[in-house]
Length: 243
Image (cartoon, rainbow, N blue to C red):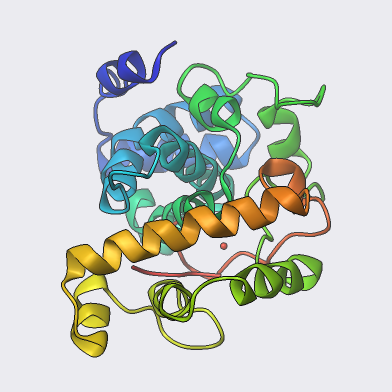
């Protein structure tokens, strides 16, 4: 399925009522894959909306949506409908995290986009399916754990290669090094340029990071194998990073 077809078809499953969502979520927690898939499909349009916030001239929207889909799947697997929140609220942070990691590192398109159909598309270079990995909570999810442990050091190495302004923008925008995430507009006001110029510098810096990651053999889903980052408590789709 082409990405354009995916964007057209993604709205075929309409939104769920509160009662339908609770019923499906309880079935999902009991191991019902069909219920889980329905919960995922009903929220795929929300993934696209979040991914579009990060899109730009040099950013692959398909890649961002794929990362967000992986975050959504993680959220659905962890969602407890009896805590009072709607799934779309719970999943927001997981989706945003997946999109942001895809923005920096890239992700596997087939793994994320395949969620739309059946959650059975094979992961690149593996025999296990997404459903198998979700069923195995000990297996790190693709796209998770990219900013901890060994990979945190690799990220710092890549960041050290960036021009100073690009590095500053990426640190501020993604909330790296312990700072809170800052919007494009706020960054522009801080350094004296327009938000569009900040976006351009951010995208250029991300391209350099990816090039550095490729040189180190770190880009993509295989990069996350050293470990996973713990999921956030009471969120929607893991460390929560907001735009």
